[in-house]
Image 1: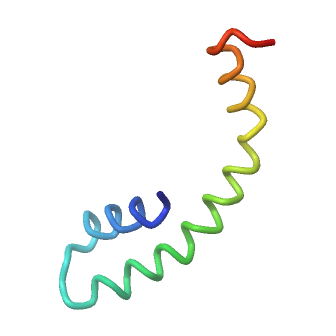
Image 2 (image 1 turned 90 degrees about the vertical axis):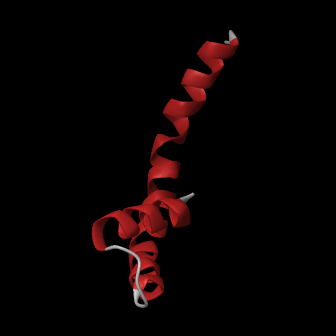
Length: 57
């Protein structure tokens, strides 16, 4: 997911040319750790919301 988002944002911001892959990899190197941290931080909240939606306690 983070790779796809990094690719889309990089393409929108800088366009697609011969150097796109390098710019995308640099963006992904920043996005991946940020995505992992966000997933761990927001997991408890997401779990509670999912349980509320499912009707579980």
